[in-house]
Length: 244
Length: 262
Image (cartoon, rainbow over all chains, first blue to last red; front, side, top):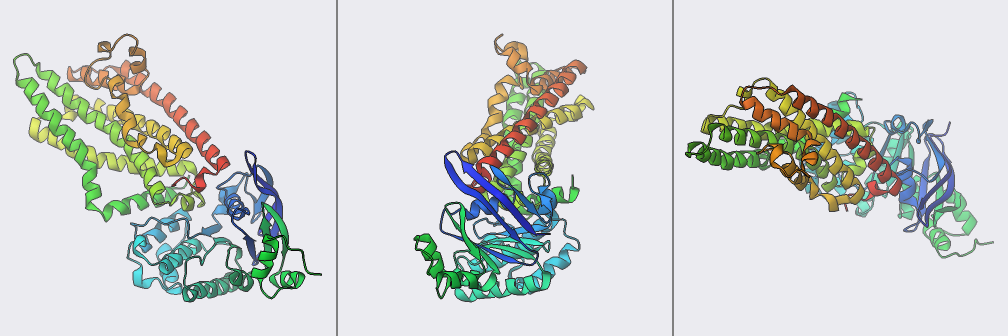
């Protein structure tokens, strides 16, 4: 059974077709990249996968649960991280993790918080208000929140945006290790092509709400005759044809 | 319905108050201030030659009970706004918490906020003006309950409008119930209102509660007024829940949950 199964997914806002009948699958333990320029439909797709947005048409099945009928069963086994959605800034890091631990029904919550604090190096600021942290610290806290329930499916929206190269590398290494240990399925939307190349088993290239190409990073590089995914991204964004 | 998820969201708000005494003080500030202003006015009326003694009690009882409705409504609406201001709604709505559990948590917080705000005002009324709200008898609990419920369904309407119009509707969180004060017969009987406005007042549970309160000051319990208040609250609460459910679904259709904080 696929961890994520999407068929004919469409979202229309009036005359604007934000997502146009896309379909894809992610196997358990796979990391799937979602690439595309601004307005390509990445955020809309993620919002529909999370149940924040009702699709105009199509079907989403996550961990065997139909998101239209049974989204809460799936949401309990999923989680999400984005630097664009904040955590309450006046609550301390530990309090924030406690809130989400309760919302996700985490057993032995205090032990889980200690575990995450150790793994993501949060101990130095566990009692500080989340609003007083640096961008790198905030990203680690958001990641800790996303992992509080040991999700089987993790959706990451630009997890390393606004991080310096060192902090970004640390997060990527941690994600690699976490996936290897947990077997978690990850859907990663990113503008960082190096990150996608490093973390993803397969990539979906989105443009104007449609999947215009897909495959493993290596297969895409081969198909476009390019040395890195950034060039492939530009080829697609600028309508350059695939190299013969 | 999961009590743990409800507690999770309540804990988020309680943690805010635990680390901020100005927030806690703010909860008591307006009820206590109102009590002082109207308490002195009531003392003046009671002491004047033409002021009947019960008028002062009616005034104080009205002020205290109306605060129950006001604080209950603001407790729900402002707690929802706290989520919106902290741009945290995205994380909340992608967690397994059901919308009804979120509402239950907001109602729980609202109850605690109301108690924190109103109890000091009740104590002050007793200490400064020798006015004991509970001398009205056990029926005062029913007055409390009805006004709390009224505050909650009004807040559901406000939250629904915020879901539809975003932060642009946030001023309603503070102002909407003040708009209902003239029709709620807090300080005067419904019969004082122009005939055309009396049906409006009688459609509100609060008008029946305050008619009941004034009768209770004379030692009479008007059960029919209480029955009206309960019935109207049930109807309005159903309407509020339907409105919320509709607006929540609409927000999921329109994508409003993605940028509601903006």
